[in-house]
Image 1 (cartoon, rainbow, N blue to C red):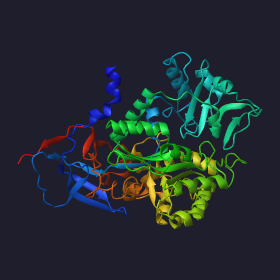
Image 2: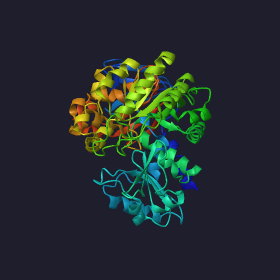
Image 3: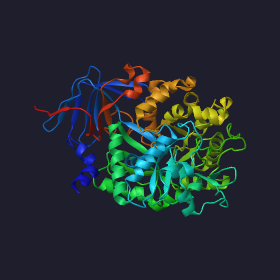
Image 4: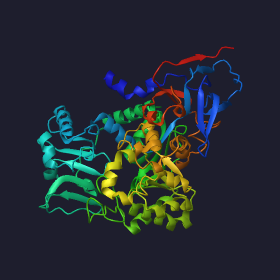
Length: 550
């Protein structure tokens, strides 16, 4: 039991700095960005005893006076940046992936099956094999099948999510238990992949995944997952997240962590649809709880599926599957009804749209509800991955934020070319075009679909790994996307994303200045320390913090 408690409360053990103390950080290279993404440099930072920044000392400025009980930290020349804001991830999904079967590292079908086989051997007899992260594109192959999965585990049910969360790979035991046969019809908004004879192959796309109900994780497993995710994010320098798809069970766990003082990352929650929002906070967004650590602010909706599973809704058929334009997950009336309900209740909208048809439809819907609700809620499109170039100016015109994940471009580039064809890439992953049009960008990781490491996102945004570099961004713009612009997208401008007096004292220490290393080395940078509300929540190396003496 002692080991279990140590694991569950590990984040608390990381907070090795006095709470409620004024802390002056000196001997540092301090960088922040203004609202336009321009770099600001400072010599010292003073965090107040209320968890907010009390003062930023300009270059050449004098050290502010301290008093007994204050602390002074010599940063030993470290670079300090605002804490990263991940504007799109799935917090519980990340935690569960970190503690469960992870197929993301698998580079072939055989390697994935070997991982499944070894994981299954550690489970009790009859227990479901669950997990995910597989991506057939990385294997250089087509979708795997139930027969493939049977080779690794045939004696018990196995259900494994694709890396994007939009497809489920199941074995024959699951197909039999769920009654999925040749006669089973595709559900609205979903697809059962079939062989040439019409038999299910073992891949269920989008709404078809709901035909299978694996047992949910237990309370201790969920507690461990959240604790693991928070510790992981602190190690990566992420101090705030926009959690997409919060369920009532998630919310209750977040509240329990907040009550126990275990929230080491600020969570801006977006409910998993209007039903979840009604269950959690039927009267509208919650206030900020736990001194700005938790809020239910918005509602997440889905307009289509994902490109990798050919569920993204396109204006023209897929280049590698003629006749298929993807999946429209909400019809015209239903989409507008849900969007209107959310905005009427004061919820910010975050609508998943990947294909160009889905993005156009969501923009059309925003245009229709704008006269009633305006643009003050800063409604968003999540991913905005494949756009008709003609739709790019509409983001600014409608005040819609493009919430994007730069690492998708470097992960998807080969697959995107196959799915779309070279002639339809002009509006794909079009960060620079959106920025030039005046649209607001906000960046995230989409973890666990991709790694949560923001430095991988900075590297992808600035280099695109050499792919369609005309859409690459400057480092200033990329960093703004993960800080000040992400804060604005989350309605937290002035509270997070910048190092300015009055903002939360959320910042990170690095051994190197990102602006002094080659762009290709951005992905290799590491965080030395992470601070939230003026308290250190992660420390990689030794830190010399000493009480100030008069």
